[in-house]
Image (tube, rainbow, N blue to C red; front, side, top):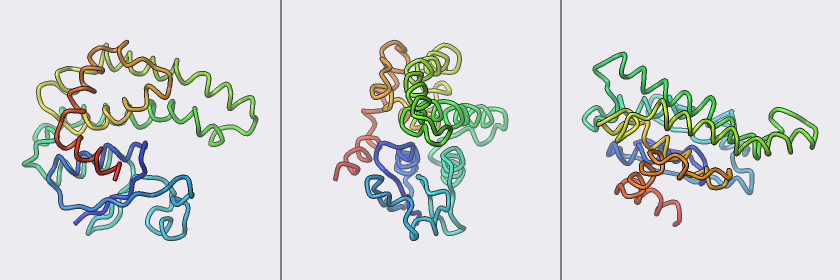
Length: 206
């Protein structure tokens, strides 16, 4: 059995959905950022980075969303969550997810995590003001150059889809109109209707 540590409103949602899509045997434990639970000694013993998600497996703990998504896809090949038999196609999946992790997520984080990069209040304001522009540009690039349709990688649903969906949930709060990217907006709606997504979203409200 796997154990996922997550917090609501974070990128952990992508792994949570993927575990459900894969039919994995897992439990999910919510951490409270309001009480700084991610920095507690108990959690730091699991993930010294002090961030979510973290996935506890029988072989150890995994962190970083692209790694966890790839691990789940490879652990449950019958779920067909990635093109595991084609190295190039699998690399394209990894490339897309790496972009979400290394660029899109970082742009979003500049809104509320400015202290990671600067110490002056004026710098925080500048970073926050840039978020609608940088996030809008990222999603425009995804829409125009990266999204194959009807799913991210084409006809087959993959681990890219819950990850894109997760970051799409941030757009409204980042003052980005998802409807400016019609393919992403349609993807978001179809993802919201998937049984696994509905189950996970309901579980997070409990």
